[in-house]
Amino acid sequence: MSAETAALVGDDGRTERLMAALSGAEAAARGAATALLDNLVISADVQQVSVSRVAEYIRTCRDPFQALDVARLLGALVGDLSTQSVDVQDLTEWAYAEIRLTALVARTCRLLRDERQSDVEEAVFGLGAHHLERLEQSPRYLAIFTEMARILDTGVGVEPRSAVSDFLGLSRSRHQSPTIDVTGK
Image 1: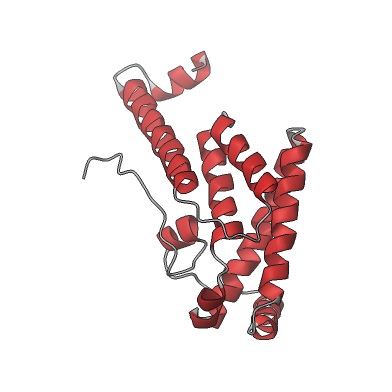
Image 2: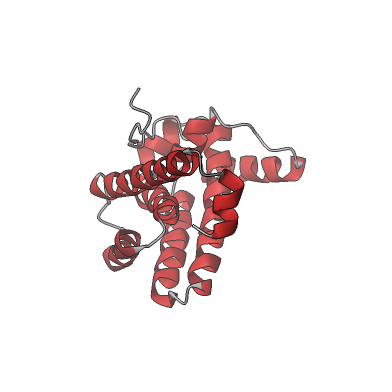
């Protein structure tokens, strides 16, 4: 911690509490990313080499929050597009999640390019393209893409189910992500 930061927080125990809270949050993020990788269900048609590259990046990423973001993205790209899931999911909810997912793929690719992780960037981009191809094979693809266009054209957006499901599950109600309670409650 820099001297300026220490001066801002003071030396009356707040620094230790702040550092403990940050350490707890980092540990929870790292644990959630690891749990997401451990619970990843990969269908046979997914590019195994690309998944392996991204998973290795997640395991070695120095930023636990970034590792969690990429793990969430990987889980959504490879594990959440079974035909029955697309058929039963609420159309607006699914379209909203697809918009978020596309934005996360773009953001992650830019981040990986900035980090000079071109092989991982290529893997994420390939998985994103494969995800869209699988979505197009769904009998509801036209309705989903139409709903995505409606959402984007309104400019207002659609509220997800909750902040927690939006953050951890990209707003898909059937998708549950593991979390670690750092508060002890």
